[in-house]
Image (tube, rainbow, N blue to C red; front, side, top):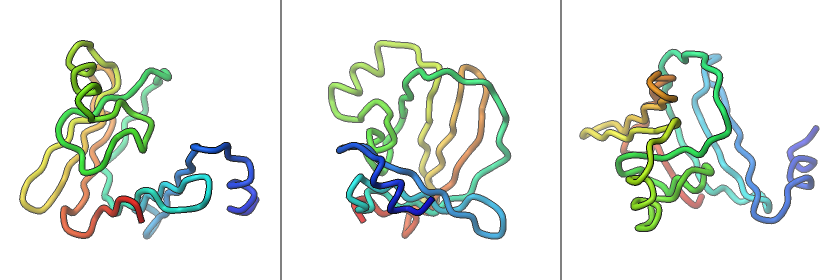
Amino acid sequence: MSLDDVFSMLNEGERVAIISEVKGNPAILRILDSSGKEVLWMRFNVSNVVKVKMDDSPVVFLGKAPFDPLILGAIPQNEAGKRFARKMEWKKRVIVRRDEEWITFEFWFEDVLVFKMRVKRKGGIRVGG
């Protein structure tokens, strides 16, 4: 199946994620909209992944993400989304931490740290192509 075939199956407003590998490890995430325009590009390093059985509950980002988490289907970080996030306990959480060089995303399900993803602050993320 070609990428054109994938885009032809998408409805308006839907997105497709492409993960590319470098030396056998996932390293680049691209999110494309239904027209093929790049919405998000991210170069990352991932820790070991703990396999857990998850449900389809929503995801909330805690901390300032460098992009709108709505791109990934999570609760948006606008004012209403932030108020909503504070009112509930969430099974799926992504905790965003920053230092001078890296942005770290900790992916949690219930009380299990599933994996950590690190992205360089400079040049590691492009939003909107």
